[in-house]
Length: 147
Image (tube, rainbow, N blue to C red; front, top):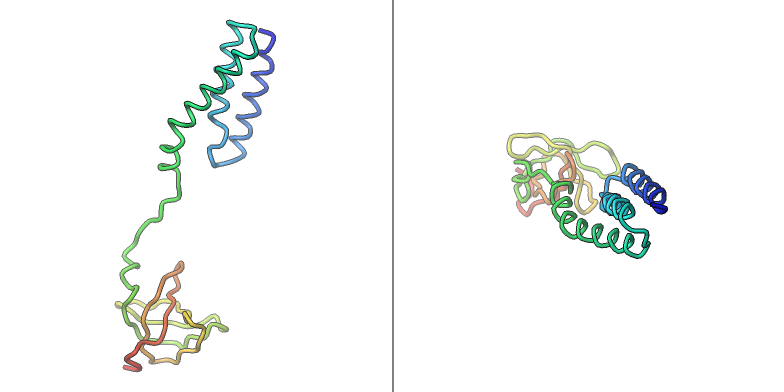
């Protein structure tokens, strides 16, 4: 019973640490602290209490962390916008990476555009879509030239 206060403090510290982060770092240790607290009601042996704390924390960590990471990880939500990668489009407003403007028309939509290689691409040029970052397409001149 003498170690019960220490376990309560440990539980509070682990709970506060968990509340301060979003990475599920110490929730298992808080649960292990509860197991240590319960064990302290039955035995005065600190070694037994610590053993129960580490075993319970370790088992909970091993059993639930992979599952929690799977459900809480930032899932990339795929959209139909990915279908424009590799397609050809037409520059409707000159693309210059030094200027904030630059538009490309592809698959019936107008997108903000940046040059993949850093070169200026004039209006009317045919480009190939290389990648998407946010709402901006990165393009390079296509082999076909102007339309």
